[in-house]
Length: 283
Image 1 (cartoon, rainbow, N blue to C red):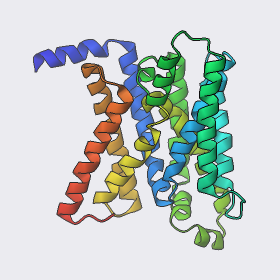
Image 2 (cartoon, rainbow, N blue to C red; image 1 turned 90 degrees about the vertical axis):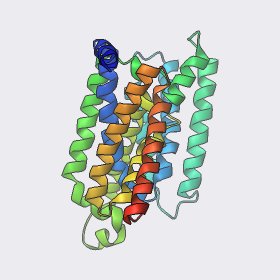
Image 3 (cartoon, rainbow, N blue to C red; image 1 turned 90 degrees about the horizontal axis):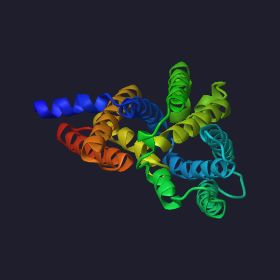
Image 4 (tube, rainbow, N blue to C red; image 1 turned 45 degrees about the vertical axis):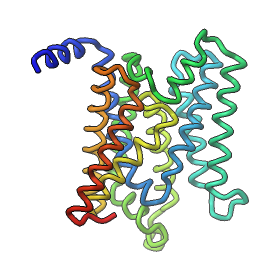
């Protein structure tokens, strides 16, 4: 036990480990608080679609030789999030089909651009890291950490300030409109927050695993709790715990960070599902 503690202290002396823990906790917190809203609004699939859009934005930034690809990737993802979530039901191409088209198209074009304008000697490694988050969380710069902290504070602050409105739009959008709430505006805000979370989470679990970070904590909390507030709080706590455990396990065991975090989230879901069954929890 003492050997494990000494090893942990030794690892914490490295800045990249501290950066990974800080960013991991913040991303887990942000993704979990909005994950409940996305699940209840049946927008779970939007995370997967926008993660591929973010990959396309990252590829464009890489081709343009941007030293920091996050601003362009964020702008790219925000635009598509607004377009997809704000498109009406009367659109010629329905929401799920539009997301599928944008998702596959962005992923394919991004990979094509990286192949054509490849400036790296390890294209496969770079793509693997972006898709699965294998090493990017452990190579963060101080600038990226500060940017992540700022965006995370923005997400949490907006969610807290607009909690009642988001709650109303989540459960009954038509009734919210009837009572004078500008539901379209709050859907617009939700779209922006989703895009910010997707871009932040790419450094943690990669673009292909982002949906798991958003959905699993919310679904786990719903196995045990019933109220929106209880589910949101427990989802946030569970997500932060799973992220910390996943990062520490990956550092000590040498496993891919993103996959390890998702594996811990899956185990947590199984445990919560069992607890819900035993104590009468409802979905």
